View 1 (cartoon, one colour):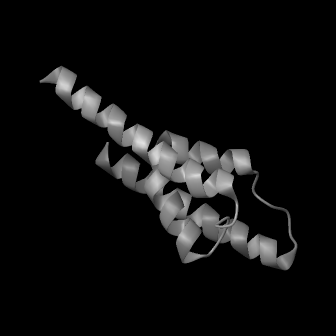
View 2 (cartoon, rainbow, N blue to C red):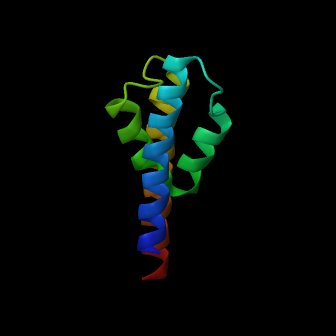
Length: 86
């Protein structure tokens, strides 16, 4: 589980960098839905780190508020899961 979470976060970080590079070159872009999908399946920390490391999507409110929102929901779900399994 931990390795899978690490890999998904690395993927989130990497696709932010790849999409930024493609944006500067005018190449085919990664759809925003795919960027959010990676965050939703557990890569929100990597996606947020990638956003700010590569300065990508940092002017879009959907990303500035959406990515941290996903992270907050994931943390809340983990806390609830922890509380109800104790």
